[in-house]
Amino acid sequence: MAKEIINTGLTHNVIASGTKIIGTITADNDIRIDGNIEGDLICKGKIVVGTNGIINGNITCNNAEIMGNINGKINVSDTLSLKSTSSILGEIKTKVLIIEPQAKFTGTCEMENNKPQHSMETKIESIKK
Image (cartoon, rainbow, N blue to C red; front, side, top):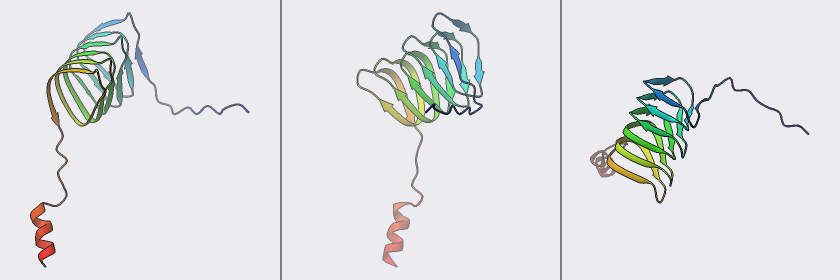
């Protein structure tokens, strides 16, 4: 039987290897970078930087999977995954950080504070009652 192809209507953008873009890129959907970007990248979806991808600038997105090189600030609202071939120089701010062995990261990292719903004092007070 033939597989049914489902079109979600989402467009995935690709910056191919050998392509260099200078300036700010904004994308409403997922984007994959296999080329070179000199500037900022703002994406409402997921950013994938391939092994040949290079970004000299800041990135902002919901999720990111990095296999290439980034020199700049990385702000990911959910999950950032640094693969073994990645090399990061800069600042990271994310909620969830996954780092594979051999991934290179030089800089600072700030994890979003997942505050508990109730403080320990509130729990102790409820136990005493």
